[in-house]
Length: 514
Image 1 (cartoon, rainbow, N blue to C red):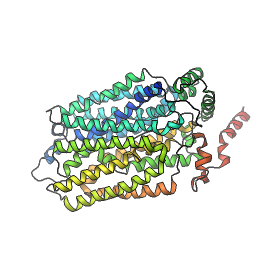
Image 2 (image 1 turned 60 degrees about the vertical axis):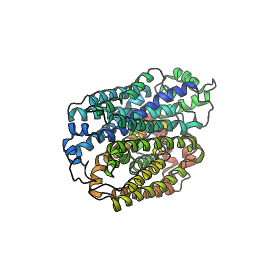
Image 3 (image 1 turned 30 degrees about the vertical axis):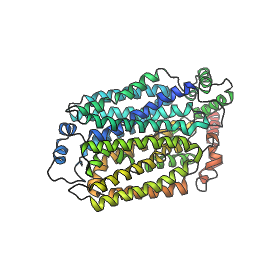
Image 4 (image 1 turned 135 degrees about the horizontal axis):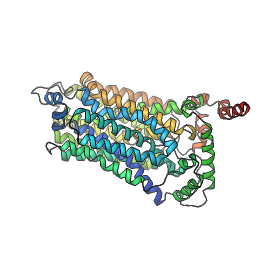
């Protein structure tokens, strides 16, 4: 699912410092942005399977669902129903570019505050919706909030993290996403039988993490990177001492100042991102987002209750099955927090590719053989589908979920960080939108073969990791070019020394022009 993490602010070597109480508080507050995002992912599928919600906004789907004879694969196929889920991600895609600029000019904290306000406005419209227009406008406002939060909160998290805890602290955002999904699944289960407004309660509770983020952001400080980037040098120094818990932060401070000066020379970061030397980072960032979505994870997490109803579970049973899947999602993400800086990135990704390929193929086979257009899947087979989904989610949650964001975020230097990151966010949101908008139609058209479709993508992802993805474990950010890109068999051809001097050359040209 969409999950997010960015490399440590200053980028350089291990400057010392510890995880202070202030850093923990800041991390908890910022990671609440993930809770907002995860809750929405989990709540959407549950709400769209509730009869009261369908009868009010999507009567055609409601009638189709309750027909005496219905097509198992097509009962929820409705473009407007899919638009309810996917419109958020289209709005987040567009919002991420604006959020990139605001993050640079106004800071991470300011951007998080506005993220929570947009999200709260969307919650009010959704929970109080009287018609489909209100519902969709509310989803768009939620999407703007998600776009802002997904841009600012992970940047904030990474820039307060000591380098040696970079992976673990970054994954806190993803952990909160999974906790949000689990909370939503549990709430869906309990409100499904509250008629006729259970769906309003489910959508309204989304305002709680947004409110926590807003109030919490009033209490925390801005990151040293952002303060120095905006020429607030004294405040940046004092904040750095506070979050590191030591007074001797001169080396890290000087590196932040140096990186900030380099970034300031780049007048057009998006244009700089298109240069040859930025191509490896950009390709990795975009590819990881595309592959993350084509694992099929959001198709399963968005529509888990719908999927389990498709294979024959009744409404309560399908929602409970979704809650179990959500619990496994949380537990497996905790595994990633513990092992990511020990085992490395590539081993986790490759193991997950094997596990996801086997489970997707097995689910597809069971449905193809035993679930026809009408009638229920035999109970034993339906149970196996739930078990296989659990193993599939488990492998994703300790690999492509958190690492799909951590790896590309470890590569962008400060001068292209927010620009490059906005490309990562927007790529993720674009393909999340496409999958959310298309999955129920794909399920109707391709039937069980839709799982073979995702399995084929997992195989391609495995080849990508083996051939093109470098290992970035425990490598300082400022050494990434020399120790990773210049030594990689393929990417080293893009690391021309001449291109590294572009900024210096342009400065000379500007001076001569004067």
